[in-house]
Amino acid sequence: MSPPERIRFLDAMRALLGASQVLDHAADLAPYATDWRGRYHGKPLAVALPADTAQVAEVVQLCATHGVPVVPQGGNTGLVGGATPDASGAQLLLSLKRLNRIRDLSAADGVLVAEAGCVLQNVQDAAQQAGLLFPLSLAAEGSATIGGVLSTNAGGTAVLRYGNARALCLGLEVVTPQGEVWNGLSALRKDNTGYDLRDLFIGAEGTLGIITAASLQLFTQPLAQRTALALVAHAQDAVDLLQQARAALGAGLTAFELMSTHSLQLVQRHFPRLRLPLELSTPWCVLLELSDSESETHAQARLEAVLGAALEQGRVADVAVAQSLAQAQGMWALREHIPLAQAQEGLNIKHDIAVPISRMAAFVESTAELVTQALPGARLVVFGHLGDGNLHYNVQAPIEGDAAVFLARHQETCNRIVHDAAAACGGSFSAEHGVGQLKTEELLRYKSPVVLSMMRAIKTALDPHGLMNPGKVIRP
View 1 (tube, one colour):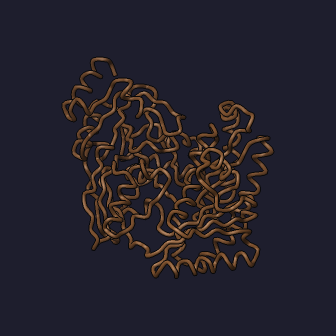
View 2 (cartoon, helix red, strand yellow):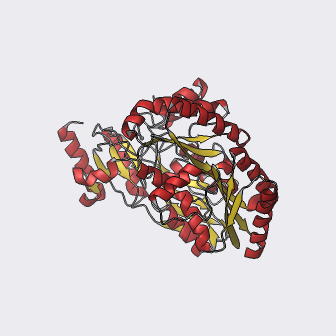
View 3 (cartoon, rainbow, N blue to C red):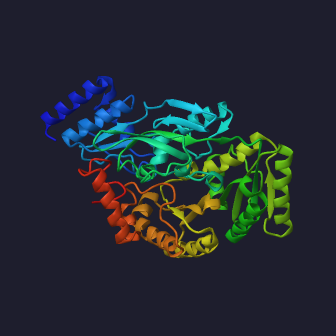
């Protein structure tokens, strides 16, 4: 875009949104131009801050007219660079943070309609105030937005009971690449009237259109919850405990997290105020949560029965059951601070893999051996949602090494080991973080030509000029 064309484009954008809602000075662009991990640093043409869906549509229409690519961004908490523009200075970053209203909440329907810029925690709070539950929960819920979690089909800690973001969404409102508005907001659980367009946009990371609002499914709040930490010697013990807990607790088992001892040691090092209720005497720790529809006494008895049996069988080495909300929150804080502790420790190689639960223990053992043989001194920081087969299999540089050099030299080797191992188990290289720009090569490597052809056909049909978040997910 020539300088005169750029001026005309920005003048037209300011006429649409108001001068204060179009940012083009370097200092104003900086917070939007770098991803959460600090891995990608882009240079947007400008940042547009529309106030509602109509303005989003007008912005997209203007971009279509001028041939300007659009990069949508919510809370900018993604881990694969999906919401970061490139360095060309030619892409418009469209921030949805002003679309932050909760439009409707129907207790009778069990549905909440939220705009894409609503922070996840605010949606949770609104549901709670109505005596209901929106169960999607993840470490970044204080800044991640509804549009973002749907665009990546985020999972979080409650997938075991409630499913991922896709399962919690009944309908969408979307601005198409042509600047048209599809109003697919719905309160219906059943609507079998043709192609499910909703599912096209969930997980598409803004490459097919821009989610501006969503109908979200709400649930009855449990009358009681109980949380516990259990120490196990082997990953297989954790898998066996999961099956035991599922059999005894059924749908009441809402979370089952696996954490390596090393990951918790990092938390202790960088966040010493967070206390562990157990001495880390085994390589692995499990965090369980039970939701109960009867009473706290009933929940306590059920959870203690499961863990007591596991202790007697030798499946579990030690157990701590939270006796208060504060203790439960403390246990969850340990889990949620693992990514923050890793960031404090330095650069690391992140993997977000999914593996069938039946093959998880074998994957963990064999992959650890392969990684440590190939990368002597590397530290494995393994944690995640064992209940749904999703692990964050991260590799930290050796203690005495230069983390940046380690990352530059060994990223490709490490990816091949971990992702090949996951694929060999019938797994996936991306479970809940998405593809973004970080994993486009992995998509080409692991998806079949048939799958890639269908994905490209969908992209071309909906976005023929390739203006929606180019360079992310699927390449031309």
